[in-house]
Image (cartoon, rainbow, N blue to C red):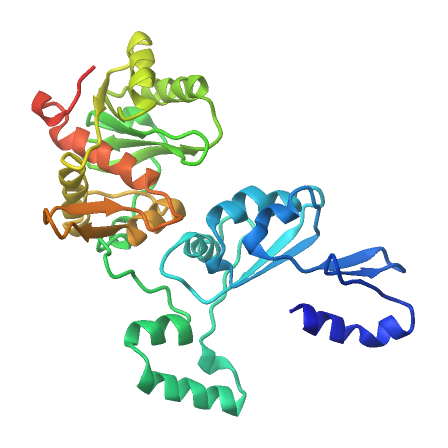
Length: 343
């Protein structure tokens, strides 16, 4: 890209209208005060503190989500800048989530997709046809058809079939008990609250936050509980969860803890898998939730034979865990034996 950019302005350089800073990989346009910079995503911190009108990410799906959210996005704040994300898909990672926002026309997002076959150049057309015969179906669909292909260990099926719920306007019109599933996070992970109507098994409220202290998270959870009259809050008790649960108990919330371990996590996730496959649960079409569900993976321990569920490397599973806890609480939560720990 740098070689192409410098070649494109070589004539302007000879005229003295453009200044090329090779060490910084920047092209300066003194007359209009503009500049073009080339950066490597291997060192995303190199853009911190910069301010851009436009950022173009090439092969965006290969860039980590943290580089995009923590380093690159803030560079657009000063000028209200735009971003163009270009990439071959790589499973259903964060780039898939951003693509889904565009399909849903969320905010100012828009998405496009074009297979290699859409390129009119004869040699590209020829390469496309040769690839169809020489590579695996999965590779062909992802690399040549630009399709978001499921990973080999996908867990949830029929995710979008259940994404049909609408947000209720009036809590008084709900007839079932409301159960809230809580998965905690603060810095690297997200805190997610999922409120589920235990009669219709419909998600009625949902919150996702990051970089928020636990005191404020507790207050937000209390507001949600009061709004819907929640009868049970099933919250992850691992790590920071235990002291937060103790605080919520002092606040009078109907909270119980669930310790996620290698033994308790499989039945928790598998209960949600069955619910989604049988369409026993419904939720709004939330891009973050759908992305996490569709990319969730399972691996089998070769020694013990036990399944191990997790998000792909570089992705999150907070939405999945919160929804799973809500479902577990609504279906089995009142059975004391269902909890590894109770507060």
